[in-house]
Image (cartoon, rainbow, N blue to C red):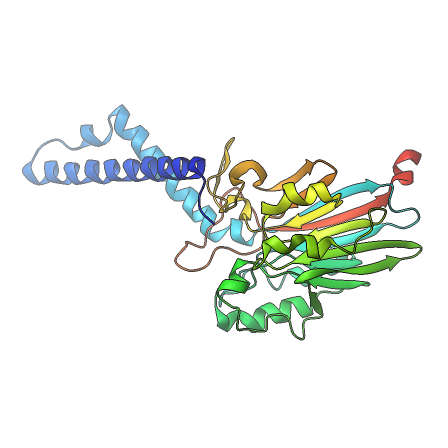
Length: 319
Protein backbone atom coordinates (compact mmCIF):
# COMPACT_ATOMS: atom_id res chain seq x y z
CA UNK A 1 0.00 0.00 0.00
CA UNK A 2 1.13 3.56 -0.66
CA UNK A 3 2.28 5.87 2.10
CA UNK A 4 -0.01 8.68 3.16
CA UNK A 5 1.29 12.25 2.86
CA UNK A 6 1.62 12.46 6.64
CA UNK A 7 3.71 9.26 6.69
CA UNK A 8 5.95 10.50 3.87
CA UNK A 9 6.59 13.77 5.70
CA UNK A 10 7.17 12.17 9.10
CA UNK A 11 9.48 9.48 7.71
CA UNK A 12 11.44 12.05 5.71
CA UNK A 13 11.84 14.35 8.72
CA UNK A 14 12.92 11.45 10.93
CA UNK A 15 15.55 10.25 8.43
CA UNK A 16 16.71 13.82 7.79
CA UNK A 17 17.20 14.57 11.49
CA UNK A 18 18.96 11.27 12.21
CA UNK A 19 21.28 11.55 9.19
CA UNK A 20 22.05 15.19 10.02
CA UNK A 21 23.11 14.28 13.57
CA UNK A 22 25.48 11.55 12.42
CA UNK A 23 26.89 13.55 9.52
CA UNK A 24 27.65 16.41 11.91
CA UNK A 25 29.19 13.99 14.41
CA UNK A 26 31.36 12.43 11.69
CA UNK A 27 32.39 15.88 10.46
CA UNK A 28 33.32 16.93 13.99
CA UNK A 29 35.43 13.84 14.60
CA UNK A 30 37.20 14.18 11.24
CA UNK A 31 37.87 17.85 11.96
CA UNK A 32 39.33 16.94 15.35
CA UNK A 33 41.60 14.35 13.69
CA UNK A 34 42.83 16.93 11.19
CA UNK A 35 43.50 19.39 14.05
CA UNK A 36 45.52 16.70 15.81
CA UNK A 37 47.58 15.99 12.72
CA UNK A 38 48.43 19.62 12.08
CA UNK A 39 49.16 20.29 15.73
CA UNK A 40 46.15 22.39 16.62
CA UNK A 41 44.14 21.99 19.83
CA UNK A 42 41.38 19.39 19.26
CA UNK A 43 40.16 18.90 22.83
CA UNK A 44 38.31 22.23 22.94
CA UNK A 45 36.62 21.39 19.64
CA UNK A 46 35.36 18.04 20.97
CA UNK A 47 34.29 19.33 24.39
CA UNK A 48 32.41 22.49 23.46
CA UNK A 49 28.81 22.70 24.64
CA UNK A 50 27.44 22.09 21.15
CA UNK A 51 29.81 19.16 20.63
CA UNK A 52 28.75 17.52 23.90
CA UNK A 53 25.08 17.82 22.93
CA UNK A 54 25.91 16.23 19.57
CA UNK A 55 27.83 13.40 21.28
CA UNK A 56 24.89 12.71 23.59
CA UNK A 57 22.38 12.63 20.72
CA UNK A 58 24.65 10.29 18.75
CA UNK A 59 25.08 7.97 21.74
CA UNK A 60 21.33 7.92 22.41
CA UNK A 61 20.73 7.00 18.78
CA UNK A 62 23.21 4.11 18.99
CA UNK A 63 21.63 2.84 22.22
CA UNK A 64 18.17 3.04 20.65
CA UNK A 65 19.36 1.00 17.69
CA UNK A 66 20.95 -1.64 19.95
CA UNK A 67 17.71 -1.86 21.94
CA UNK A 68 15.54 -2.02 18.80
CA UNK A 69 17.67 -4.78 17.24
CA UNK A 70 18.65 -6.98 20.19
CA UNK A 71 15.90 -6.50 22.79
CA UNK A 72 12.48 -5.32 21.66
CA UNK A 73 11.97 -7.82 18.78
CA UNK A 74 12.22 -10.61 21.39
CA UNK A 75 10.15 -8.90 24.11
CA UNK A 76 6.66 -10.31 23.61
CA UNK A 77 3.70 -8.50 25.10
CA UNK A 78 0.40 -10.19 25.92
CA UNK A 79 -2.60 -7.86 25.88
CA UNK A 80 -5.86 -9.13 27.37
CA UNK A 81 -9.04 -7.38 26.20
CA UNK A 82 -12.41 -7.92 27.91
CA UNK A 83 -15.52 -7.37 25.79
CA UNK A 84 -19.15 -7.57 26.91
CA UNK A 85 -22.01 -8.24 24.52
CA UNK A 86 -25.72 -8.89 24.75
CA UNK A 87 -25.39 -11.38 21.88
CA UNK A 88 -23.92 -14.01 24.20
CA UNK A 89 -26.32 -15.21 26.88
CA UNK A 90 -24.68 -17.99 28.86
CA UNK A 91 -21.06 -18.57 27.85
CA UNK A 92 -17.82 -16.62 27.52
CA UNK A 93 -15.38 -16.98 24.64
CA UNK A 94 -11.60 -16.79 24.78
CA UNK A 95 -10.00 -15.88 21.45
CA UNK A 96 -6.25 -15.59 20.95
CA UNK A 97 -5.00 -13.51 18.02
CA UNK A 98 -1.57 -13.63 16.43
CA UNK A 99 -0.55 -11.81 13.28
CA UNK A 100 2.40 -11.07 11.00
CA UNK A 101 4.76 -13.81 12.12
CA UNK A 102 7.04 -12.98 9.17
CA UNK A 103 9.16 -16.02 10.01
CA UNK A 104 12.83 -15.76 9.01
CA UNK A 105 15.55 -18.40 9.16
CA UNK A 106 16.48 -16.89 12.53
CA UNK A 107 14.13 -18.04 15.28
CA UNK A 108 12.90 -15.18 17.45
CA UNK A 109 9.56 -15.57 19.22
CA UNK A 110 8.17 -18.65 17.51
CA UNK A 111 9.18 -21.12 20.24
CA UNK A 112 7.57 -18.97 22.94
CA UNK A 113 4.15 -18.72 21.34
CA UNK A 114 2.68 -22.19 22.04
CA UNK A 115 3.39 -22.11 25.77
CA UNK A 116 1.99 -18.60 26.20
CA UNK A 117 -1.10 -19.01 24.05
CA UNK A 118 -1.98 -22.52 25.22
CA UNK A 119 -1.81 -21.38 28.85
CA UNK A 120 -4.94 -19.28 28.22
CA UNK A 121 -6.84 -22.39 27.03
CA UNK A 122 -8.40 -20.48 24.12
CA UNK A 123 -11.62 -21.57 22.48
CA UNK A 124 -10.50 -20.00 19.19
CA UNK A 125 -7.10 -19.02 17.78
CA UNK A 126 -6.90 -16.69 14.78
CA UNK A 127 -3.98 -15.73 12.56
CA UNK A 128 -4.48 -12.54 10.56
CA UNK A 129 -1.88 -12.92 7.84
CA UNK A 130 1.75 -12.58 6.67
CA UNK A 131 3.35 -15.91 7.46
CA UNK A 132 6.97 -15.88 6.28
CA UNK A 133 9.73 -13.68 4.89
CA UNK A 134 11.75 -16.61 3.48
CA UNK A 135 10.42 -19.83 1.96
CA UNK A 136 13.03 -21.76 3.96
CA UNK A 137 11.26 -20.61 7.14
CA UNK A 138 8.02 -22.39 6.18
CA UNK A 139 8.74 -25.43 8.41
CA UNK A 140 9.22 -23.10 11.38
CA UNK A 141 5.92 -21.36 10.64
CA UNK A 142 4.03 -24.62 10.32
CA UNK A 143 5.59 -26.09 13.46
CA UNK A 144 4.58 -22.98 15.41
CA UNK A 145 0.97 -22.99 14.23
CA UNK A 146 0.51 -26.73 14.63
CA UNK A 147 1.65 -26.45 18.28
CA UNK A 148 -1.22 -24.09 19.14
CA UNK A 149 -4.28 -25.63 20.78
CA UNK A 150 -7.87 -24.35 20.64
CA UNK A 151 -10.92 -26.22 21.92
CA UNK A 152 -13.29 -25.04 19.15
CA UNK A 153 -11.08 -24.19 16.17
CA UNK A 154 -8.18 -22.33 14.56
CA UNK A 155 -8.74 -19.93 11.66
CA UNK A 156 -6.50 -17.89 9.36
CA UNK A 157 -6.63 -15.37 6.55
CA UNK A 158 -3.91 -14.60 4.04
CA UNK A 159 -2.02 -11.29 4.17
CA UNK A 160 -0.27 -9.38 1.41
CA UNK A 161 2.96 -11.41 1.68
CA UNK A 162 0.90 -14.61 1.51
CA UNK A 163 -1.01 -13.71 -1.65
CA UNK A 164 1.49 -11.60 -3.59
CA UNK A 165 4.79 -13.38 -2.79
CA UNK A 166 4.02 -16.87 -1.47
CA UNK A 167 0.89 -17.50 -3.54
CA UNK A 168 2.36 -20.82 -4.75
CA UNK A 169 3.03 -22.25 -1.25
CA UNK A 170 0.58 -24.21 0.84
CA UNK A 171 1.18 -22.27 4.01
CA UNK A 172 -1.43 -23.82 6.28
CA UNK A 173 -1.70 -27.52 5.49
CA UNK A 174 -1.06 -29.77 8.52
CA UNK A 175 -1.30 -26.81 10.92
CA UNK A 176 -4.92 -27.36 11.99
CA UNK A 177 -5.87 -23.88 10.75
CA UNK A 178 -8.88 -23.43 8.47
CA UNK A 179 -8.22 -20.72 5.89
CA UNK A 180 -11.11 -18.31 5.33
CA UNK A 181 -10.99 -16.81 1.83
CA UNK A 182 -14.32 -14.99 1.55
CA UNK A 183 -16.57 -17.05 3.74
CA UNK A 184 -17.79 -17.56 7.28
CA UNK A 185 -18.25 -20.44 9.69
CA UNK A 186 -21.05 -20.97 12.22
CA UNK A 187 -19.75 -22.04 15.62
CA UNK A 188 -21.21 -22.69 19.02
CA UNK A 189 -20.24 -22.90 22.65
CA UNK A 190 -22.85 -24.10 25.06
CA UNK A 191 -26.16 -22.61 24.01
CA UNK A 192 -24.60 -19.63 22.23
CA UNK A 193 -24.05 -19.36 18.47
CA UNK A 194 -21.38 -17.11 16.93
CA UNK A 195 -19.75 -16.61 13.53
CA UNK A 196 -16.23 -16.06 12.28
CA UNK A 197 -15.81 -14.59 8.80
CA UNK A 198 -12.58 -14.06 6.92
CA UNK A 199 -11.34 -12.53 3.70
CA UNK A 200 -8.12 -12.98 1.73
CA UNK A 201 -6.02 -9.86 1.16
CA UNK A 202 -6.26 -10.64 -2.56
CA UNK A 203 -9.89 -9.59 -2.98
CA UNK A 204 -10.91 -6.85 -0.51
CA UNK A 205 -13.90 -5.95 -2.68
CA UNK A 206 -15.46 -9.32 -1.82
CA UNK A 207 -16.07 -8.52 1.84
CA UNK A 208 -19.89 -8.62 1.38
CA UNK A 209 -19.59 -12.28 0.33
CA UNK A 210 -17.69 -13.09 3.52
CA UNK A 211 -20.41 -11.50 5.64
CA UNK A 212 -23.44 -12.57 3.65
CA UNK A 213 -24.60 -15.49 5.80
CA UNK A 214 -24.19 -13.92 9.24
CA UNK A 215 -27.45 -13.07 11.01
CA UNK A 216 -27.52 -9.72 12.80
CA UNK A 217 -28.58 -11.40 16.03
CA UNK A 218 -25.41 -13.54 16.29
CA UNK A 219 -22.05 -12.40 17.66
CA UNK A 220 -19.70 -11.95 14.69
CA UNK A 221 -15.95 -11.74 14.21
CA UNK A 222 -14.32 -10.62 10.98
CA UNK A 223 -10.71 -11.42 10.06
CA UNK A 224 -8.84 -9.37 7.47
CA UNK A 225 -5.16 -8.57 7.22
CA UNK A 226 -5.38 -4.76 7.19
CA UNK A 227 -7.69 -2.19 8.84
CA UNK A 228 -8.65 -0.90 5.39
CA UNK A 229 -12.21 -2.27 5.43
CA UNK A 230 -13.25 -1.11 8.90
CA UNK A 231 -15.46 1.74 7.73
CA UNK A 232 -17.28 -0.61 5.36
CA UNK A 233 -17.57 -3.52 7.78
CA UNK A 234 -18.80 -1.35 10.65
CA UNK A 235 -21.86 -0.53 8.54
CA UNK A 236 -22.64 -4.27 8.42
CA UNK A 237 -23.00 -4.51 12.22
CA UNK A 238 -20.01 -6.82 12.65
CA UNK A 239 -19.09 -6.97 16.32
CA UNK A 240 -15.32 -7.56 16.30
CA UNK A 241 -12.84 -6.88 13.46
CA UNK A 242 -9.40 -8.41 14.01
CA UNK A 243 -6.49 -7.28 11.87
CA UNK A 244 -2.73 -6.71 11.78
CA UNK A 245 -0.42 -5.48 9.00
CA UNK A 246 0.72 -2.18 10.53
CA UNK A 247 3.20 -3.70 13.03
CA UNK A 248 2.30 -0.69 15.17
CA UNK A 249 4.63 1.14 12.81
CA UNK A 250 7.45 -1.25 13.82
CA UNK A 251 9.31 1.98 14.62
CA UNK A 252 7.33 4.46 16.68
CA UNK A 253 8.25 7.70 18.42
CA UNK A 254 7.26 8.83 21.92
CA UNK A 255 4.05 10.92 21.93
CA UNK A 256 3.74 10.54 18.13
CA UNK A 257 3.44 6.83 17.54
CA UNK A 258 3.99 4.98 14.28
CA UNK A 259 6.08 6.63 11.59
CA UNK A 260 4.78 4.37 8.81
CA UNK A 261 1.88 1.88 8.80
CA UNK A 262 1.57 1.06 5.07
CA UNK A 263 -2.18 1.18 5.66
CA UNK A 264 -4.90 2.91 3.67
CA UNK A 265 -5.95 4.89 6.74
CA UNK A 266 -2.39 5.80 7.77
CA UNK A 267 -2.09 6.54 11.47
CA UNK A 268 -5.84 6.62 12.06
CA UNK A 269 -5.86 2.94 13.06
CA UNK A 270 -2.18 2.27 13.74
CA UNK A 271 -2.44 -0.23 16.62
CA UNK A 272 -4.65 -1.29 19.49
CA UNK A 273 -8.35 -0.93 20.22
CA UNK A 274 -10.84 1.31 18.40
CA UNK A 275 -14.60 1.56 18.28
CA UNK A 276 -16.05 2.41 14.87
CA UNK A 277 -19.82 2.60 14.99
CA UNK A 278 -21.07 -0.70 16.36
CA UNK A 279 -17.80 -2.49 15.61
CA UNK A 280 -14.78 -2.99 17.85
CA UNK A 281 -11.59 -2.93 15.80
CA UNK A 282 -8.35 -4.37 17.12
CA UNK A 283 -5.10 -3.78 15.21
CA UNK A 284 -2.50 -6.29 16.39
CA UNK A 285 1.17 -5.23 16.19
CA UNK A 286 2.23 -8.68 15.02
CA UNK A 287 5.05 -10.98 16.07
CA UNK A 288 7.74 -10.61 13.41
CA UNK A 289 9.15 -7.84 11.26
CA UNK A 290 8.96 -6.64 7.68
CA UNK A 291 10.89 -8.78 5.21
CA UNK A 292 13.13 -7.96 2.27
CA UNK A 293 15.77 -5.30 2.84
CA UNK A 294 13.90 -3.72 5.76
CA UNK A 295 15.98 -3.71 8.96
CA UNK A 296 14.81 -6.27 11.54
CA UNK A 297 14.14 -3.74 14.27
CA UNK A 298 11.25 -2.78 16.54
CA UNK A 299 11.16 0.39 18.59
CA UNK A 300 8.25 1.24 20.91
CA UNK A 301 6.16 -1.33 19.00
CA UNK A 302 6.66 -4.59 20.86
CA UNK A 303 5.58 -7.89 19.28
CA UNK A 304 2.13 -8.78 20.49
CA UNK A 305 -0.24 -11.61 21.35
CA UNK A 306 -3.81 -10.49 22.02
CA UNK A 307 -6.29 -12.48 24.07
CA UNK A 308 -9.95 -11.47 23.88
CA UNK A 309 -12.34 -12.54 26.61
CA UNK A 310 -15.86 -12.04 25.31
CA UNK A 311 -18.52 -12.20 28.02
CA UNK A 312 -22.31 -11.99 28.19
CA UNK A 313 -23.38 -8.46 29.05
CA UNK A 314 -25.31 -9.87 32.01
CA UNK A 315 -22.02 -10.72 33.72
CA UNK A 316 -20.98 -7.08 33.66
CA UNK A 317 -24.27 -5.99 35.18
CA UNK A 318 -23.74 -8.35 38.11
CA UNK A 319 -20.40 -6.74 38.98
